[in-house]
Length: 535
Image (cartoon, rainbow, N blue to C red; front, side):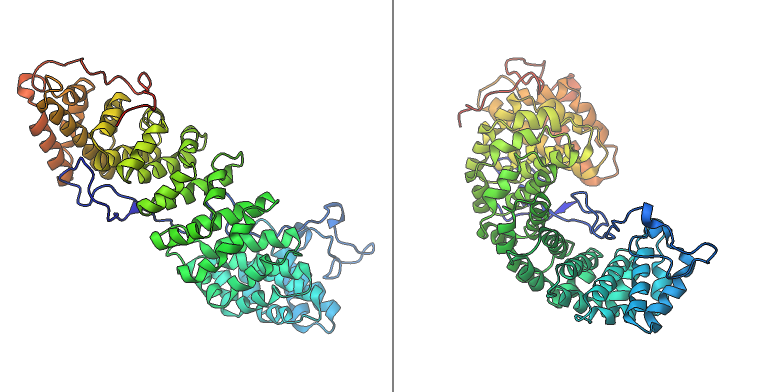
């Protein structure tokens, strides 16, 4: 899920298998059909018609025909067998009224929930005629219905979307944003959003054809109806998402407008603006800096404590992206009071938010010792250890392990002693029973850091023994390390063997003798020291 290492110096506690110290990990998002915040990337516009008026209107005994239906007919009540007749009306209609009836019925058929006939419509030859109708600014009703029909096509399969794109849909939808009619502007934004939601190929074509500046012009107009703004900012968010990310120079122009939209009174507008910012911030330090320079950090931090879950989710994603930058960028988050807001998110009912919060903490833990001081002072780690490091959800546990490991790599001895007092050893050793090589590697690296601290303290005369090794032995960690030696991963085998040979003399039954209880490493729930730990 994550990759890439920072250029940070190694932490105070290093391990042989770590080449570049703690990792500040950038997110690698896979383009999926479902938005991370629960809204589909492409959707059919609902046909708000009355079911009562949905039946065909004919004289008694008169057969149903293409004129038996009207704007009030529900999509499910339009017979699919009349599709060829509707296509003929669009392509050969002798009047605007006839063409309009055909277009209207086509977009209704394309709006049915079950198996809409995208392929039949595309293969019928009607698409160029619908596109030509989008050019008719003097006939806004026809233009609107044609755009709606094509928007529904774009909400279908990849092949359907690509078909209308190659036929010339993009410049028509962009031009529609300049219509003097709000319904047409709204439909133009909706169509662009569906096309952008198809994936990187379509997204990049839209960016190359001026879709983003056109959307920004619309979003900057204070007279735009809220409905138009909702679709426009949703389309904009789709233009900023996907991997590989669009070039920063193409999307950074949206940041001033997005910054203003974060304060809009409409919740849905704020949510999509917040997600767009999270997508733009996802990447290297220059992307993070562009977001910081736009002035959105205070508002994004506010989202962490709000009651709207999508805003919390996008907020923690953006905060995590910023924390993956350099130390100065991370410090801006700390200066804006982000740390006290992270603890409650570790207890959030949504797994995704707990995972993202642990990921954010792991990135801050890869900072300098002063930033780790601030993390510890915020009393976050007792919750990380007691709630996340022992989680049954592997992705949450994995991020918690990273948070602990980065402290062992970038922290100093008092930081590690604090985690020991929080009871980190037992849950950390429990992680060694998982079967994912990457998380095992990180857990062993963290454990090695604690064991080395225990050895240093023993040699310095602070204890009569390596009390960390004693704690690992008592909780069954040595058994888990021995089992890891049977894995086929040679790196894991070497790490496990090195730990056993260096810190455990098992021929005597225990590491350097009997277990010593002079230093209390109780379980994570029993020991939660206050934030006054002295560094």
